[in-house]
Image (cartoon, rainbow, N blue to C red; front, side):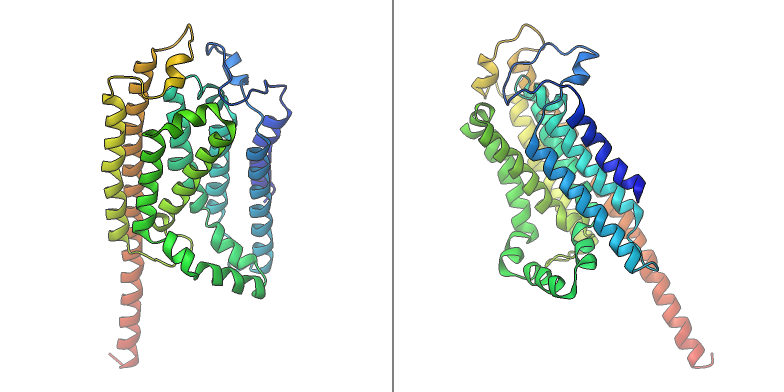
Length: 316
């Protein structure tokens, strides 16, 4: 448990304690050069505070559950998944990635992919809802279950709604004036990141299938769910890659004496979304297939054991 706690806090403490530049959204950054590049972290109190609180709450709940149920403790791998998701958020929103996302569209794309395709599924793989239900008192557990079973949660967690919301967030931000405005407005920029994280969490919730959900979908449907997400990701990446003009004036007017041209940078970002996003979905589909096989093996073993017990009861 102490190791998990250190793993959650040390990277954040380092980010808080280093004498690093405090830069706002869209502020200019020097040409990326090592080792100075590694020191271009941004102090984001909202991000760091939220991540630290989430890590402490999660590890505290793990400790309570392990003490209360020594025969059925929280699997350690889930803790590592959750902490890895928090670290991915810190990297996306406070590291040199954040320092250069206002300079390079391709870096901004990496940031969004980290939030949606890395941090969100890892956090859900940590089963935070299951952990909260196990750690809560009976009265709090009843209230949490009531929320999970409410009409609002039924609606927003419906797989088709979550899928459409995920696609709409990506297409809506990238092909509207909102994307460019977010590069100039810190509050809108934070809203953009929050919407990507929310869309990612809703999208991956039924696909991961670890936490309880109003819509428990079988493995074949999960596989189809993820497979259908690939075309919309590919089409969006290809649309960005094929654009003949710079879509976001911020990058066209933000002159710099280094790096690719704004159009080449935009095409690189589209390529990253196309190739990197599809690879992420393929990995997720492989994990679902592996989980499906394990589930079938367990079900077969359980069925065999039940048949053997029935035969033994009949004296065969």
